[in-house]
Amino acid sequence: MTPATMGEMWTTVGSTIASFMFMWAIVRQYFPYELQHFLEKYTRNLISYAYPYIQISIHEFGGDRLKRSEVYEAVEAYLSANSSTSAKRLKAEMGVESSNLVLSMDDYERVDDEFRHIKVRWALSLTSSSMQPMPYYREAQQEKRYYRLTFHKRYREIITNSYLDHVVKEGKSIRVRNRQRKLYTNSPGYKWPSYKQTMWSHIVFEHPATFDTLAMEPQKKQDIIEDLLNFSKSKDYYAKIGKAWKRGYLLHGPPGTGKSTMIAAMANLLGYDIYDLELTAVKDNTELRKLFIETTSKSIIVIEDIDCSLDLTGQRKKKKSDKSSEDDETAKKNLPIKEPKEESSSSKVTLSGLLNFIDGLWSACGGERLIVFTTNYIEKLDPALIRRGRMDKHIKLSYCSFEAFKVLAKNYMNLDTHPMFDTIHQLMDEANITPADVAENLMPKFPMESAEARLLNLIRALEEAKEEATRLKANEEQKDELAKEETTGLKANEEQKDELAKEETTQSQDS
Ligand SMILES: Nc1ncnc2c1ncn2[C@@H]1O[C@H](COP(=O)(O)OP(=O)(O)OP(=O)(O)O)[C@@H](O)[C@H]1O
Ligand SMILES: [Mg+2]
Image (cartoon, rainbow, N blue to C red; front, side):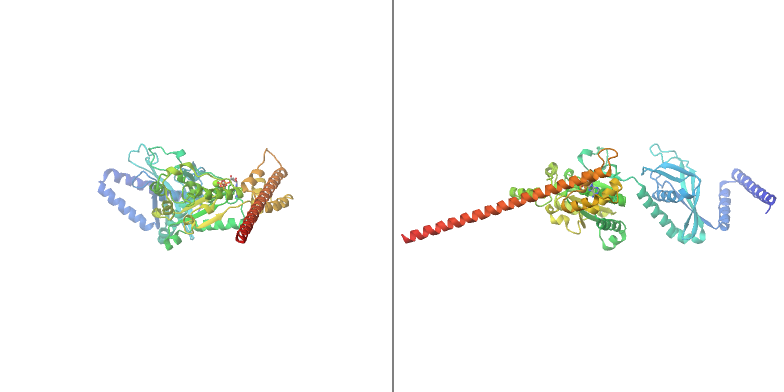
């Protein structure tokens, strides 16, 4: 086709459209409404007969006009992930629930998408509403956005049954990944103002810990990651076996071995919020239940130092002598004693209240939740509290192994290997040091402190720990020796007494 014929063709199309518009204007002005309606209906039918495409609109605001439609938000997230590479006009905004700049297609822009080799087109359009804008809802202003999906009518089944489902699911998970996560607390320090309905206060959760930066044996770490990912994908499985979709983790080990750090890494891995439950601030079981009902799905409910939280251990009411023997045990292990928190006396949460809480009696609201307890003394806990089924997975976090040290060396100094590693390896087999202490030594004390100096600091700390362990062991042995001597002395005394008594009896019989 030559440019001249093309020009003629466009002139014809243009003049046809112009005549149609002119006629339509006359119809609108001079014909009664019924006739207009009749003509419009038949014109539309005629067009749809020749036009083989179907269109689906998804509006930003639903019937109540106050809340953005969930489907619209999911489509928006889906398209912003897919359109930012193909759309030519984009708009950049700070996400409502995210701290990042979010790119999405601009008004009146169109993007194409493909699903099982079917091509579809999305367009973002605007309509203006005749309703008055509402003073408190700036979103529900007069201009209303909507996405329009266009596809060939022969794919109607696939698009309505599968594609839309796929878009909404994918969009929702993109929103979860991008949202700003929150750290909730019920601690009295963060007392909620009375006008607020919720019992939790929150701040934005931005802990940098991940499983990559967590120092522990690689195999153990991998097992935990797989367990968590499996849980988060097992919605159908939990429904099938009739169990609330929740999982309990008990993290135990000495202070500074990474229990709290692991909780942050779990939240970052799964994209969950954290509810840090301060049990001592909970008045009674009813309040505990209310708090639990208010937790949202995709969250980790954490109770730190469960052994100190409340009188839940079943052992805390022990006689004084038992307590002191417990403390001796603690001293032997060289662990600090965490005092039970003072407020515990004012809290009336009972063990059975907490067990109900864990058993998911109140989880009728559904949704995935992890419950994590931490403790330094697993042996102090009531077995009912930590039996499998309640605390499904027990994870022991222990002193720093050489494998764990290598993770820290990589994180803190970007070192994979070093001639001083051998000495460290040997010392770590002989002395106990927590990952927190290792991390402290690997941190530069001043800018540009060399790797050698930092490794040397660690070696010194390890040698001190080794000396301390040897000293403690010698003390123990000395104590044992003394105890043994005392027992032998007492036994000898007893024997002497028996001997004397026997002699006395013989003498009195003789006389
Ligand atoms: N396994 C680890 N990997 C990386 N860093 C760790 C690890 N363990 C401890 N740390 C470092 O030590 C600090 C203290 O660790 P964390 O608070 O997780 O210990 P904890 O086991 O919760 O102790 P506590 O029993 O006293 O609550 C963290 O800020 C982190 O930097
Ligand atoms: Mg901790």
